[in-house]
Length: 225
Length: 204
Image 1 (tube, chains in turn brown, orange):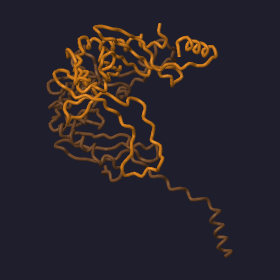
Image 2 (tube, chains in turn yellow, cyan; image 1 turned 60 degrees about the vertical axis):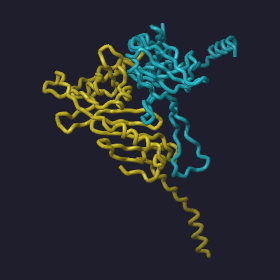
Image 3 (cartoon, rainbow over the protein chains, first blue to last red; image 1 turned 30 degrees about the vertical axis):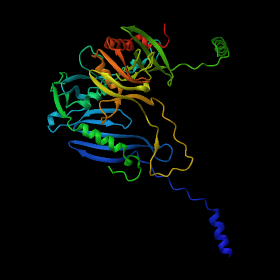
Image 4 (cartoon, rainbow over the protein chains, first blue to last red; image 1 turned 90 degrees about the vertical axis):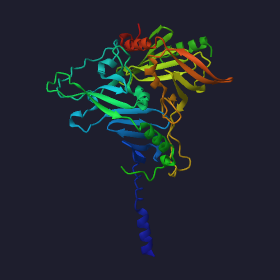
């Protein structure tokens, strides 16, 4: 009995075991994936993780084929990005090389507009002088800037995302990018990659059904990457 | 509260040394042409030791249409209101360039629960995120995806007019909004947002 009491007292004197660490919540849950013709499609929920229990922050569906990725949301809206590699090595391009996009017979000039820090300064505020940047011949493009698109010189330059309706309606997307030349100072020729858009309407319909399904509201049983 | 007592309070606050809240967005440059009214707003970012420009936007409006155009080329489009008899929530279609787009107000949903997670009773819902919660959406047909109405802005550059179809007590009615001069209004905005006048913290 005394031994039992001593053991009980000893056990009571031990610090309480630390609670098990809460499992880390995933960034997203993929609930549907398929191939629709040439289009690869994936639908997922983005997990809201700040309250401890997972919540659906938002839902999205991504439709992709070489050169184009289109993202849509169930509440509306579309966002597209252009980047990819063709089967021909000479036609590899990155987003930085894009100079034109064409949707069927309409062509837009694409231009990256850099935004230096000075552009966001008030002209009547005395800021400390900024030292000039170090010369850099192989620097990547500054990330401070934005893409613009316009049909003709002198037209307003809108963000390319405003062309989403035209993209969805078009039969073919052509991406014009600047090819490489030996002389670095000379601009390269404009090369074109064609992205047929046949089947995109079907892919969008698949996305709509997937995002409206019961699977879109499940946290468990997601499709592994 | 009438104007006089409010003025007294403001003067009293200033004299007492109370810091009055400084607006984050200032109306800086305005103009009008061809029935369009334009206004540049300059956002002041005071998070650093010296204020800098957070962003620039320009509104282009006439009765029935309001386009908010950002210096980086983005845009939002609102329709109805502004002295017309059209409530934005009553708009059912927009006709532009010979195409009828179904229209409606789309809302950005707040974070919501998964169907297969046990949530403790009384767990507070997360706060509604700040920013745009609703926007005017359009789609070409019932099976197509909804897009922000701002995707019509590029088409508006060359169109003579845009028609709003809306619900009314007597049935569906239409309001035609002329678009002549819209291209020039957008270019005015681009020039105004690039000007020094939009970059003055203390307007002359």
